[in-house]
Image 1 (cartoon, rainbow, N blue to C red):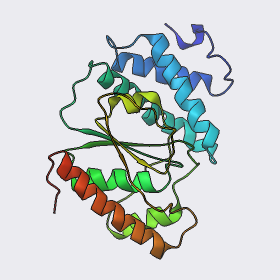
Image 2: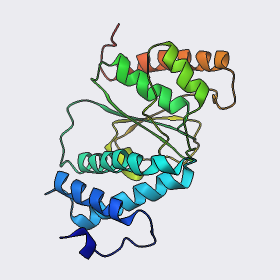
Image 3: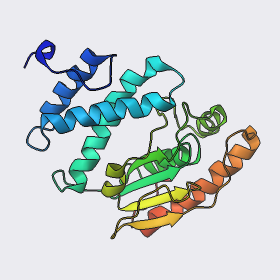
Image 4: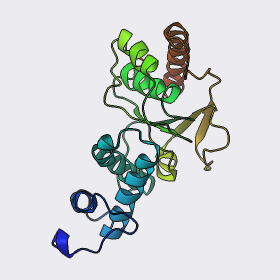
Length: 219
């Protein structure tokens, strides 16, 4: 179907053409798993969810590609349409701008890719805290391509382990999931020295988590 012949996505004036193209591309990627209407709905929800907390609108379109793709992948995993060959861990904090981002990148690094990680926020902010980016850069880990994402039901369903960090009761609870709550200070507004301490505490927690899921940490 030609993009120009498609009905407009409800409630969205810009950028309809871009979102329609993205929906077309993802409908091909997830052909046989999801219908076009499901893909369109996820694209629109992902775009509006990111737009709500974004401070730089120019970034939203590109981020929508990653966010919508990851959400649809998570939904397919939860439904058993895509197989999972490594444990899935979801980290959730309030803003998804500090603790959960550090935990996700540390887990991916220390597991050597033998754990798949996602992160989300119950009330995400626009950008990752600058001191968090710097603290991770000091140990050779780059958060430059990461961004805060709203917590969605699909990523919780796909997770084997859900780790919460000060997000209260915002995370839905599903039977059969493992839940952990890590008590960590919020790095928002903290000095770089303080954030380094939070980073190191998270690293210790990640090492324990990897051991609990049977994954040996990389040196």
